[in-house]
Length: 428
Image 1 (spheres, rainbow, N blue to C red):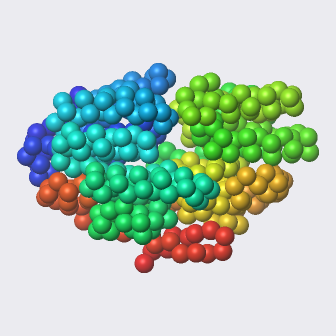
Image 2: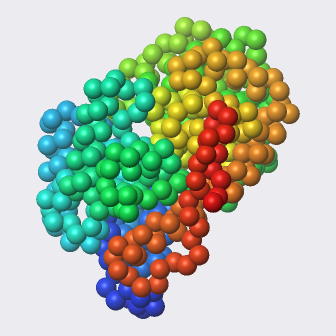
Image 3: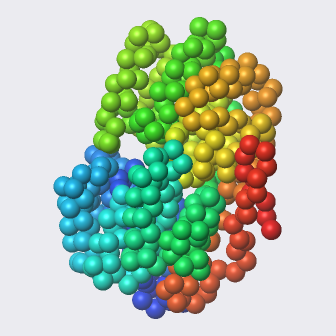
């Protein structure tokens, strides 16, 4: 079975008793989309790996189990109500008390905050946290931001042994705010499987046929939660303005459109009202949750992420790996991944007019789309390959658990320097 550790292999890797590791996120989709590569690499390196999250009932937990990983459902939702926090703490604490884990690795802000405190009180010997994007951000009111920074500081100092940051800006902030001692803060970057996400022209015709999209249509794609903070309404408004001038175009919205299951439950309805009000139901397609993102991107021409808050979004890396130009907001994470004017365009959050202008430019200039896409693919291959990110984490795991055979030759994450409107990773 995939979830069983072979003692001989473990011994060969220098592990007499395979350490038990629990990966935890808020929802099962996050485990599937963010954590499976790390879980596979840990298992390959001799660790016994399990995971825990809320089961959203989409079949995702079954898919995780089919990969050979025990999945533990948690009673947690994406909201900050006292009832949810108490219920989630009890659910996580009970799991950790009976699990006898050597290390718990937490992901996503809410699960990570509650989970770290639960892990500390449950006596877990090692607690890791990956900041895929701190909850606080530049557009947050000062008092609110200060409160969440204080909570992050408290959780870091009281209940965190290692902090991984995907974004260089998050790393710098964590060091500056002293969430942990700098020696325990690691910038690991973000990466994608460049063999899975790659240009695939032969797929485009087939996928467009399945979705009822004309072959000559310019396809604009959004992937993410259908909530206000992802800027999906800004994208819809920009596209609606352009739709009449560009009849050979289609907008695809990929994300859970039927049950947001989130703090924000109104955005989906507002999006549907916008579509119906402009009679664009055949041109703006709400495809809901998908397990075949690489196929959707193969059928796309432009990727847009108009988010108000991000960490280091994997969706941008996936799109660039598929040789798509990217339009994204000039915020933490996004500006670290794409180069404004070279692999796509950045614009100010909420600036629908700017988004409209940049989107129209790419819709009308096919040559520019192709050139930017090629540059994006090369950038991903150089800086955002998944293998680099995994190796950095495995090395820290082995060091923290005092295991032999630390992986040799792991390159350090790129240092970020300012270049124009974006931030460009350059090796030092």
